[in-house]
Image 1: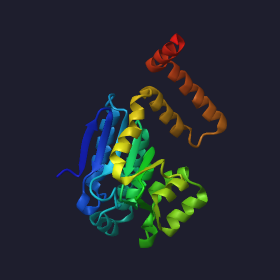
Image 2: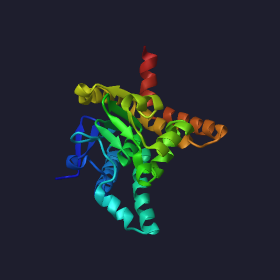
Image 3: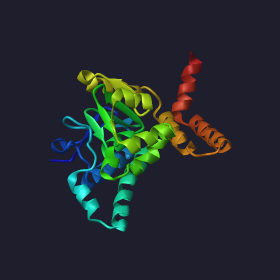
Image 4: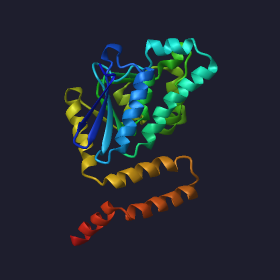
Amino acid sequence: MSELLITTDGAIRYLTLNRPEKRNALNESLVAALKRALLDADADENLRAVVINGAGKDFCSGADLSALQKISGSNFDENLEDARGLAALFSIIRKVKIPVVSAVHGRALAGGCGLATGCDIVLSTDTARFGYPEVKIGFVPAIVTAILRRNVSEKQAFELITQGFEFSAAEAKDYGLVNRIFAEATFDDDVKNYLNVYEKVSRSAVMLSKKLLYEMDGMTFDDALELGAEINAAARMTDDCRKGIAKFLEK
């Protein structure tokens, strides 16, 4: 049985974590499969968005027991190499040109919460639970903190990573970690309807918007303005923009 199910519905690619008996816990092979699938999706010009979801009752419970056992028996350099492999997954998500969306149901904990947080958009059922409980076993959600720190206030991030408590979808939305909450009973249809928007807007404009948003991070104000000017000029040269302007002027 494949640990990652890959399906395509129209212009949307679904990557389904498929270890339901392990609550979709992450191991080395699943992380590697996610990386490959994301890169494949990035190369497919017919796609408008990628969705990461989970089979069974939960989205993802974090690292599995074998991964934790490997951590406890490895030296610093081995652990650093392993951690960099996970960090590469988050980097790929940001570099994929189209939106990468997490669709969270059940529990998204530890590395699973990190995976959800690392996506461009987070959609959630109203009953989902989130949390970064690593501190409870002497661990640190260190890699995802690079993203968490960019999504919530410093004080909120401090509380989340140092107390390790679970929180609801409603709380996650208040923190700024969840974009939309849908009823569990209609979640799949609601996610599909939400994503339909990306089939109605310009693919090139969305791609340039994502590039602008993330490359602007950390820039000075003047550098951000200059990047904005360059992206603005690039957008004007696209077929989508030229056709869009022509259509607008016809009205």
